[in-house]
Figure 1 (cartoon, rainbow, N blue to C red):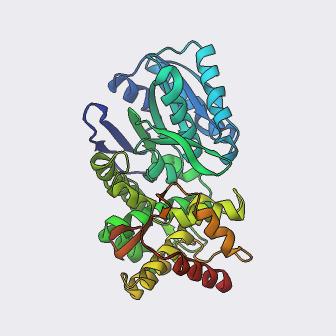
Figure 2 (figure 1 turned 180 degrees about the vertical axis):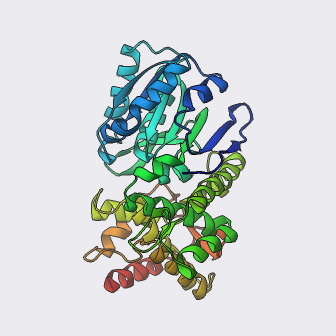
Figure 3 (figure 1 turned 90 degrees about the vertical axis):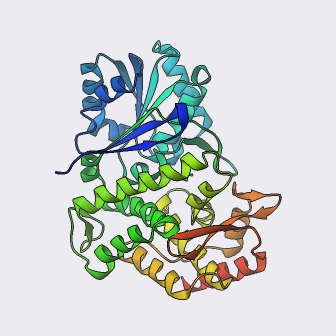
Amino acid sequence: MSGDTSTVPIDLGERSYLVHIGPGEQARLGQRCRDAGLGRRAMVVSNPAIARHFGQSILTSLGRAEIDARLVTVVPGERAKKLATVGHLCDQAIAAGLDRGSFLVALGGGVVGDVTGFAAACLYRGVALVQVPTTLVAMVDSSVGGKTGVNCALGKNLIGAFWQPSLVAADLDALTTLPARERRCGLAEVIKHGAILDLDLFERLEEALVRRPAAGDFALTPRVGLSAELARYSVERSCRLKGAVVAADEREAGQRAWLNFGHTFGHALEKVCGLGRLHHGEAVSIGMVLAARLGVRRGELAGADSERLERLLAAAGLPIQVPRGTDPAALLAAMGHDKKVRDGRLKLVLLSRLGQAFVAGDTPTAMIEQLLNEASREA
Ligand code: GLY
């Protein structure tokens, strides 16, 4: 793949860091770590499949920079996102001789990033973290912004910490190894960024996928794909948009909550449908459709904007309907366990127009119930 490397600064005072985006970033990782002033000992955390693809080249790059690193793996998928994994990673790091000046490298997608990030926040009460995202979801969302954590019996991501990385290296070459389904899931988060913050990004995607669909360098469906340039732009623009939000509201007291657009419905869908049946980006895609329709129902979003969002998601090959057989009452109950419930009120991110979101805590439960009933009947 050709194209230049872009660098996006995330401005958080003395915890500021750089996100490097481009082909060949994994090979440059060791030097990037040295430039960021990181220590000489590291533990790279990955899962077995990702480690097979990229583990050796990462170790080689770190070794060339005279960083002593070892690679450990966690089980693939959401199953790894539990407290026991964090304890196990900390044990391995301590046994390997890492000290407070050492650092952890998360090599993988969102799960590896979340669990490694939380281990970095806990180990010796905090060691440095480097995020090396290998999926589109991780590149455009989870590797930037410092959210780390694990799941528990009552829901996703309910235990965790804000722990910012010291460096993010998004190697666009890794996108070539991704299954199309994973690319679609990543694109759901890019579409989300467009829908809540940036009409121009939304319209670029609409132009490429709805108006002039073509097979690109990175297939999404058998007929539609992203060009290398649009993929690079999507990652860079998403990091800039998210970085600006995080810089202004790191702890989610205000605008950062917008990034949860589609996620309250999405997390409930993941829980009710069973973790693994719907991938996160797919659940978020359906969640965004439900949130947009709710905005129309409340009289705050034009029906035409909601339809444009549905068309774009569908053109990207993402699901826009609640899976057949989903119990709407179970969905509503699962939404009640979401982190966005405060003082007993469900806070939902809605759109006032494409490119502009807001948080509403006053939606009558009966309205949400009716929406979910209708969406389940449509399936
Ligand atoms: N993924 C949402 C956030 O980082 O705030």
